[in-house]
Image (cartoon, rainbow, N blue to C red; front, side, top):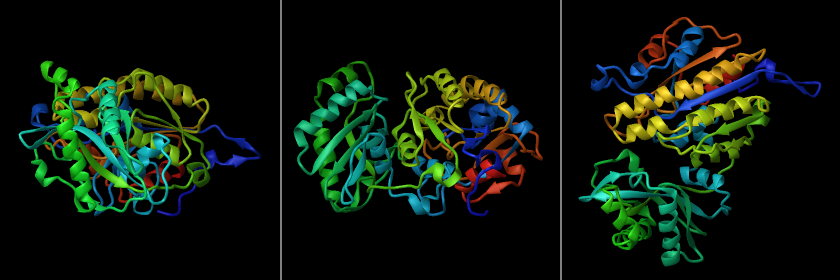
Length: 413
């Protein structure tokens, strides 16, 4: 594909912005393998999703590889691709992106790590989220870690639920770390950081385990038979990153709706406004209807609205196929349906549905395979008028090898 450009209906003319509207809906991790529980259908095939299927049938579908060869199958890389940015050029780690969302100032010499609260049981990674610990409980634990261990060169920053950050000032690392959600059931001695600076990270993780074991919060969680926060887990490290403005590249003003700092950070880096929705949790109990309503309102102001829903991915990490199917159905009913109805009232419009990466329920982990997508709208026609699925998308023969080029195709084809 050629250098990214702009759909003719979104260019500026005499200082006036024309009326084409674009929506991208990302059901995180929705792509999967055939699941025996569903009669060897995938979650996408088993789910009742009439609105997504209507988009696929009236428009076109295909597959896109969002994870460049040789890069890890992370949401950071995949989301960057879906937003139209080449990870090979712009990616410098997951944690620095989340630091942007938290308005944490970093110098060029600082290192930032993602800091999960996790459950370790019998020496194995049992839960990447400490039972989706509440933000209130987690904040208490992280702030008390600061009281115990923070100094002028190191500080923890509390986030949402199990997702937090650790910043080292003027540090020097060259380490390999492991995302806990991709290694459920794996002995942690195989997952400990390795390389230059790893000893300091391992020591901090060990200190947290001693500090947490008799903490009142964990005593209560054990009494309630909930997974405890038995350790911090450090991963996703990187240094300060910068990205070129989306509006400068494409001539389009955008906004993002998401509950997770990763997508918020990416949006802020490319100049999108972030719209926060009350009750949006980044889990299966998120406020689906609120996200749909916020997107409809945002279309009045912005050219492009990017809606991210974490729920299918979290269900997959839990190994819960039924939960994943239900999350897809909730997305279809409360987000895709209302947004699809609303966008068709504009003179020119396009809508795209695309998971960022597969997260098979069987493995509970991300994978790097290509994902199916469907798009419909002004001047979009397809050849296979079938519901959206991994198999149907493959049948079309339409494949975008470099994921960041999907945005260009969506806007200007």
